[in-house]
Image (cartoon, rainbow, N blue to C red):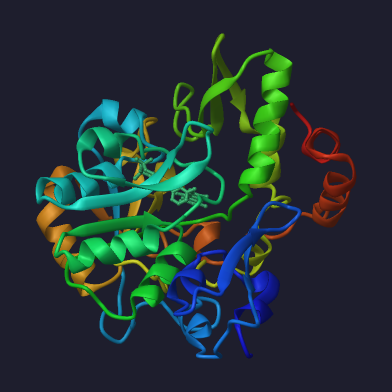
Length: 366
Ligand SMILES: Cc1cc2nc3c(=O)[nH]c(=O)nc-3n(C[C@H](O)[C@H](O)[C@H](O)COP(=O)(O)OP(=O)(O)OC[C@H]3O[C@@H](n4cnc5c(N)ncnc54)[C@H](O)[C@@H]3O)c2cc1C
């Protein structure tokens, strides 16, 4: 393979290649579905091969399992119920990031900008961090985040970076060395839709409602954590929609609108790129019923010695019990999400007729 453009649809869109290029000849551009892919200015390219070296699809970027052979598994919840209600799962992110912030560190995670674009952002206070709570089921814009993280690390700040496994793997490769002051936390991940389709969905909802959407929460817990309910805040008020009644949410869950590389994701197993992995502890009602409740339980995998040391220092911010690989197993930990049979038909109709038509035809709901 000569350069990164040949990776094609296997590309995760992580931006490591764009930022490592010594002659800045790689740009991320959007395809018709809204996913970002690198394009190379061949006239400027000096064939150094760095873009391929840092690409998490081409180069391995998971932790060396010989150094820490057995991931430790925990079910955990934040002791403060209000925190858990504002978190997607059991509030593990808040506990981990609190420790970093208390030790003068910086936290990178995903929040919405004014246009409801999900972006990686930098937080140095609990107020800024709170803005990063909650899962946004869409591929975040990383922008120049990898460079900003590198700068913070070189300035000897303690850094927490959270993201999807491919984003964490991209950062690990981009940095090309381990920093003692960096903690990488990846999410268990079902896959990501594009921002373009998400925005199309929001526009449709705004048209129906006749006023702008001001916020979107994918995991409203009013009916309990195990029910997937989206809350849309409009200028005129709030609407709660069950996942099965939302075209976007159903097409996300059933594997119609994910990034092509998600259907072949190499991170849907216990071989993780992060020091710590966080997700939902699905099935807790059967495996640890006494620990279960409707406010959300986090699954925490501790994957490296650094992760273990951190967890030992920070775990008093959580209530937790040890679990097992078998008890915590969920689909996103043993196989990539399967593409829905209607996937290609959806995209054809989307490209020809737009989201309103394709969403209603294949997504049901509104
Ligand atoms: C696209 C996506 C798919 C997921 N799929 C699964 C799954 O199949 N199974 C499972 O168990 N868990 C999945 N999760 C993880 C789960 O939804 C929670 O995000 C996770 O358990 C953290 O919850 P919390 O209560 O600890 O933190 P919260 O306080 O809710 O914090 C959420 C964390 O997720 C990060 N985040 C939010 N949106 C994004 C995004 N778009 N891209 C990158 N990072 C983001 C935030 O920066 C923060 O670190 C997924 C998350 C995302 C974003």
